Image 1 (cartoon, rainbow, N blue to C red):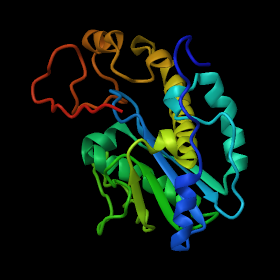
Image 2 (cartoon, rainbow, N blue to C red; image 1 turned 180 degrees about the vertical axis):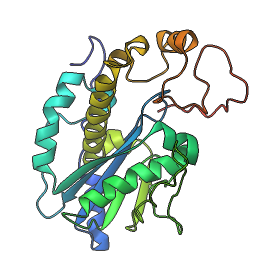
Image 3 (cartoon, helix red, strand yellow; image 1 turned 90 degrees about the vertical axis):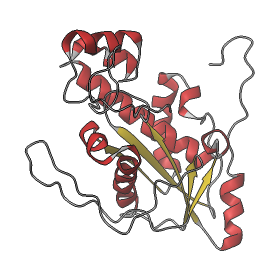
Length: 247
C-alpha cells in the first residue's frame, strides 16, 4: 500500500526491454542485487528472463523497496510463472571479505546466470545501476575458505551483452521482478539465521545497519555471518576497512 499523501510511482514496463528487439534480441534478462549495504549476510542477485515475443505486463510489480513484505512474497510465484526462467544467486559474507564487494556481486550473479542457462540463454541483460559488475572476467574467482582450503573456481559468468541503466529497478519490469525475487529470498535467509543468532535482530533488520544491530555487535562481537572487513559496531575496530556501501 502507498502511504497517505505519497504519490504512487509509475509502474515499470517492458518498454526498454522491447527496444532491444531492434538488435535482434528475443530473450532479455533483467538483473538486480540486494544486500549490498548490509553488515551481515550475503549479497544476492536476482535474474528474470522474459521472452519479447510473448511477454505481457504483470500487475503489482515494483522495485522491491517500494513493496510491503506480504506483497513481495505474493508476487514470487506469479513472477516465476510469468518469466521464461528466473534465479537468485548469493555470495556469502566470507566471500565479500575475501573477494571484495564487486567480485562478490559477480560471483552471486554468475550463480544466478548459470541457473537460468539451464532453461534458456538470454540474448542481452538489463542491469540496474551504472556499473557492469556482472559480465564475466578473464579469470575465474578463487578464494581461501576458513579452513585454509581453496574454494572451487566460479562459473565463467555472464557472456551476453550487458546494458546498465540507472533506476532500471523503477522503470524496467524485468529488473523490478528480479529485485523482488532477490529481496524475498535474501530476507527469508536472514530470518532463518536469526533463530540461532537472536541478539542481532536479523528477523527485523535483515542484517542492515540499524542502531540496535550495531549495539549488539558491540556487546557480543560479530558472528560468522558478519562482513568482518567492514565497520560493524558503533566504534571503529583496529584494521577494519571502511567498505560499507548503500543499496
